Every structure is written in structure tokens, then in C-alpha cells.
Length: 223
Image 1 (spheres, one colour):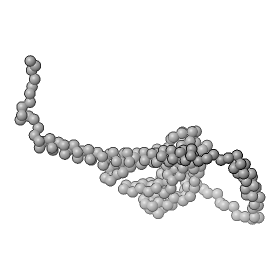
Image 2 (cartoon, helix red, strand yellow):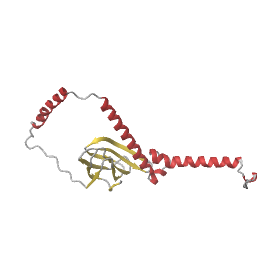
Image 3 (cartoon, helix red, strand yellow):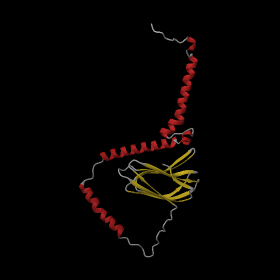
Image 4 (cartoon, one colour):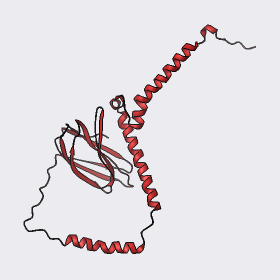
């Protein structure tokens, strides 16, 4: 015979208590899903808590990486299916290239032609990205403010996303894959942080140099 403490019927939870515990557990799980899982995994932040805690940015980056991986896989599959260029096609391309270059070089400059003025940049930042590494630089801009920019990659190319964010707001201005450089004017759609996210998808280190000027109040590296 073994001695055991058998609980009394009065000590057992009632059906109402069990139901209440189940409902509380379901509500807790739903709150965690909306406030933590959705922002951190998918960049979806209906409550705004994820952006305050910095989890929405994590989810945005995860979604961007997933999209880049899918695009890379699709590009690889397409390249595998496409037939290789024949030797005659390569010969024709090589023969046409010198003629095209000669046509460009042969155009003389007009006497007295105006030379574009050299741009005086306000800030210059540089960062080295290892294979697979990403970085983000943003400026603080008021709605309608403009900033002129120019960035160039030394030693390769990068994938980029020009975007902006503010509490409860986000926007993607432009995206690109395998780009060696870009320049233009960024006009803020709303007051907040606006800038770029770059990722090195190559197999060697690259150096990214960003030059900016304009109506921003601050510029800094976010990650």
C-alpha cells in the first residue's frame, strides 16, 4: 500500500474556474500575438507597441531579407532555364561594342561649353559591408523638406531600399538590386526619419560612401 494525498472534491477547480483560466490564457496569447509576434516577425504593428519597443523595424528587416532571398532564388532559377549565348552571339556583341564606344568618344565638346558646378556636400559617411551584411543611415526631415544625396559602392554592388518612418507611418520610396551607385533628391512625405538601407549580397567586402546636403536637421547610422 502506498500513502498518497488524494485532493478533496472541494479543492478541485470548478468548470467555471477552468473556463475562466482558458479564456485568460487565450486573451494573453492574442495580446502577445498582436503586440509582439506580428511586429517582430512580419513588421505588422496595429497597436504601435512594436514600433515603440523597436520590434517593428526587426520585422521589416526580416520581411525584406525574405523578399530578397525569394528574388535571388527566382533569378537563379531563371538563369538556369535560359539558354547560354552562343559563340556567334558573343562575337557579334564584341564586334558591336568597340563601334559604340568609338561613336561616344568621337563626339567633341563644343567650344565654350559650360561645365557643371561642383557640388559642395554637407556630410559624408562611409561604411564597409562584409558579404551578407546590411546597414542603415537616416536623416531627420520635416514634411516637404528636401535633401540631395549621392552614394557609390567601391568593390561591388548592393541591394538598397530608400524609405522613411515616423510613429504610425512608413513609406518606401525606391528599391534596387545589384546597384553600384545612385543620386538624386529625397523629398520627405511626412516629418520623420528618411534614408537608406543597404545590404551587400556579393562575395567580397564593399565600401559604401554616402554624401548628402539639404534641409535635414540630423543624420546618423541606425545599424
